[in-house]
Image (cartoon, rainbow, N blue to C red; front, side, top):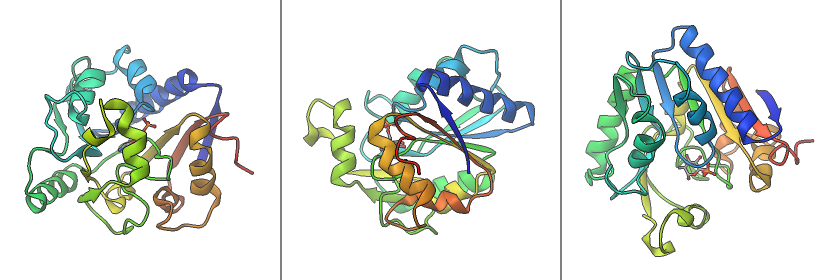
Length: 234
Ligand SMILES: N[C@@H]1[C@@H](O)[C@H](O)[C@@H](COP(=O)(O)O)O[C@@H]1O
């Protein structure tokens, strides 16, 4: 794992942008995208740049079950606001939270990923070490699946909703195996509340208790962290 320690998320966003630019320069066609507060500075740098994605494809990691693109807390809405409205792709895929037939939706999404192998996948990191919505205990062989969110994740994501009860309890997420197939992975994490997860991901045993620890098995991972998130690395 290649670890880059930066001063703050603004410098991290600059580095994240550079990694996207390099991927574009090297001919990457498919970009795996993430939501959450973490990648926003990277997306801001990208959307303010002259990088062109009009002949490229994006595939998002996850979506809440029950929320569609018009719901302000949906990940589709987030992507429209922070990325696609400013920098459109030829096609952008996000799991369809309004498709309540989980079997149908997860199979549909797996086919999209199989047809469009991801060149660069960007990831955030949950406080409990989750990636996408792959919570602790997720099978490393998992492909797209319906997830029951943990209390820790519901609590962490409640800040985007009026009440904690409004946070959806389920999500669709690419699986760990789907993520591991990406050619290059960029994970960003900022702030002291991510320090434990970063330490366990990088230096702990590879275990389903810390889904991100499986990234130790990937040949091409770059991690951008600020000093607070790196503070527990030994
Ligand atoms: N499903 C998302 C993850 O993809 C994201 O990485 C994580 C961290 O979010 P944040 O970047 O806001 O800390 O939150 C959510 O649970």
